[in-house]
Every structure is written in structure tokens, then in C-alpha cells.
Length: 276
Image 1 (spheres, rainbow, N blue to C red):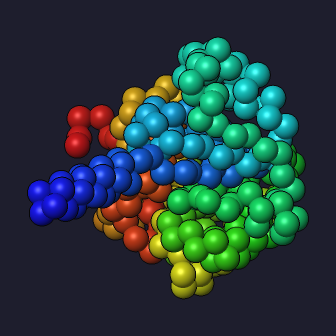
Image 2: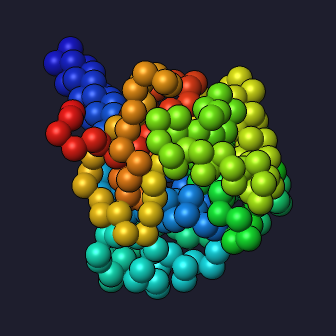
């Protein structure tokens, strides 16, 4: 009887250890949200960046977009320099890991229902292109933060822009910064206000471990290199003004799943040639 009891206890212990091991290695559920414009394109690329990490890191990818799901799954060109057919890239296994839902970022029920069971969030609702796309960063981010708090989702990586809040003036070392500042003061005032409102909402979210991304570049001809650089300190450090959408997305996804920067905002650009 003693031996039987020990055997049962050992069996329970082994089972418990197996369950613990499975819990440690199980992938996370990542929610990616994006709207329109160049910053929204980073959200589309975040789905590819998440798939690159594999199911052991990210078991499920929930994609919430203001665009129809065909915008992600059927379009070969995602306005980028990746030089691949993005629609043809998806494998059957990858499609099984994804759930793509069209939502209204001004509808509280849409977001609250969809964020249940999510471990981390990547949000690309901003748009800094005047006369193009929607302006849902402010209202959408407010609802996302509320849903995160409701479902106790701790980690969120949010898209903003150079020149927003404490990054004024934008790109202080390059003439492109002056051009961006001019746009924000004139024909892009609406975009500036929308992005500012979103960033202020994130920074006031006490229950969220956030990272705010302020990217340069994102041009449609910039080829991804799987490299990027963060500006360490304003006025003292610089980054390359060319950053590929996929590389920006890779950084956002990696920070969502394995956080290294907490409750902060960073300017991100390309790696300067010849420097590491």
C-alpha cells in the first residue's frame, strides 16, 4: 500500500510538472488592431511579424481592423518594399492561427467583446496622412484601453508619430522634421490632434504596461532589413530616417510578447549604415 501510495503521488507530481511545462511553453494570444494609412500598414505587417515568431511564442493572432478581411488576406501589395506577394505567403497553418474581424473602432461593444482572452495588444490606429483614411486613434485608443482594463490585459504597444507630445519638434537633426512640423501646424492639424489625444490616453492608463512607438520613414519603397534603431535621447542621438514597415512591426510585436521597455515612448528609425 505504501508503494502504491508513493506511485500515485509520483504520478500526480509528474502530471503536475507536465502541466506546468505546457503552461510555460504555450504561446500567447496577441491582438493586432489597425485602421488606414501608412501607420495602419504597419498593423498589417504586424500579422506577418507575429507569424514569424511561431506558434510556441504566439499561438493565436486576433486581427481587428476597420478594413474588410480581404484587405489583409487577399491583397498582394501592402504598400511596402517587401517585394513579396503577401497574400500568397499565408500557409494553411498560419491561417488557422489567425482570426480576422472587421470592427468599428468607435463602437465600445466591438472592442470589449473581441479582446477577451488576449494576452497583449499591438495597436496601429494612428494616421498622419492628410486627406487619406480615417481618424480613429483618439476615440479608438480610449476604447482599447478601457477594454484592456476590463479584461486585465497588461501589455500594450501603441503606434503614435514623431512630433507628438514630448517629441516636439520632430526629427530635430534633419530637414524632414521641419517639413513634418509644418504639416502638423497647417493641413495636418486634425491628424496631430487625433494622435496627441491617443498618446495622452495611453500615458494616463495606470493599469497598462505600455510602450509608445514614434516611427520615421515607413515609405513604400523601403526594403526591410530586420534592423532598426531607437533614439536614445532627444538632441543627443539620431537614427536613419528610412525604416521599413515590416521592421517597425517586428519591433512592436517583439516588445508586446517579450517587453524590455516599460511605460515609455520611443522614436524608432533605421539603423545608420556603418553603426550598431
